[in-house]
Image (cartoon, rainbow, N blue to C red; front, side, top):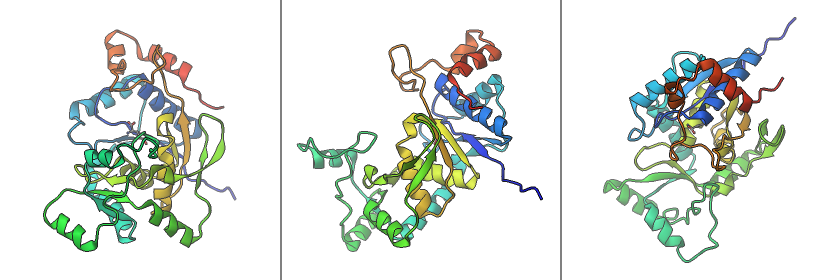
Length: 298
Ligand code: GLU
C-alpha cells in the first residue's frame, strides 16, 4: 500500500504598501520554485492589515508584477483585511487564557520610562522591552480606562505565557530551520521580545497574530521568507504553541543588498520590479537575473 503525504504548501506574503522590489521578487520566485520542485501548492497572501498604508493600486501591482515574472498561485488570494474577525478570535483565545493585557502607553511614555537607562534591554527590532507600566493595573483601573474610551493595545504577558506552556509540559519550543546557516533545529527564545504588542491600538491586530493565524488557516507547511524575519519566528513559535497551531518548517533566505551593502527596502526606495519592466527588461531576463540570487536545493 502506498502512503500518501499531504502536499507541501508555500506562500509569498507581501504587504501592499508599495511596489515590490527585487528582494521581494527573489523571495516570491524562491517560494514558487520550491513549490514546483516538491509538487506542492503555491499561495499568495496580501498582508494589508495596515489600512492607512496599504492601497489597492499596490495590490494590483503585486498581481501584475508577479504575473509578468511568470509566477502563478492558487486563487482566491487571501487578503488579510478580510479576516479581522479571525484575528480577533485568535486574540480572544489568548485573552481568555489570561495571557494578554491591555496597554494604554504611548511610545513617548515608554521612552520616558526607560530614559536615562542606557542598559535597558531591547527587543530584536531595537525597541526597548516594555517596562510593564500597564501590566499591574488593577482590574478596576483597567475597566475604568477602557470604559472611558481610551484606546488600548494588547500585549502578550510573556511570563504568564511561558509558565502556561511549562505547565502543559510539552516538548521544548523550537523549529526546523533550512535557511541561511544550514538545516538545523533552532531553540525558540521568545522572551527576547519581552511583552510584545499583539494588537495595535489603531489596527486591533498585529503582524504576528495575523501571520500565525493565516499560516495555520491556509495550511502552510513551509514558511520561506527573508532573514529579516528570523527573529520574529521565536515569537511565532510561541504563539503557535499557545494556540495549538501546526508547526511549519522555516527557511529564512539571505536578503538582497544594494551596492552599498544595505538591504533592499521599500522605505529606502529600492528599485522596483515595475521600474525594471518600464526599462524594457524581459520577464525571462528578469527570472535569469533573479535565479542567480535564488538558490533552489536539488
Ligand atoms: N508581509 C511581510 C513583508 O512584506 C512578510 C511576512 C512573512 O513572510 O511572514 O515583509
